[in-house]
Image 1 (tube, rainbow, N blue to C red):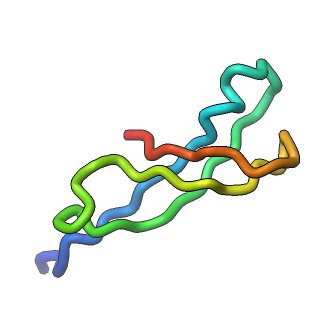
Image 2: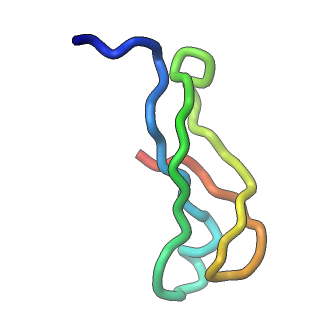
Length: 60
């Protein structure tokens, strides 16, 4: 059975966390429509390790 629609699951990873050198990572899972949003997504999300809102970008 074929999947309907263009929605795919993507992972958002914190960009600031890599530069701090702290262990662990902040990631969120969400879905997007590949047809409407072909570029990589970027959101401001809460990072519980850094305890602040940071930019999270889509990773492959």
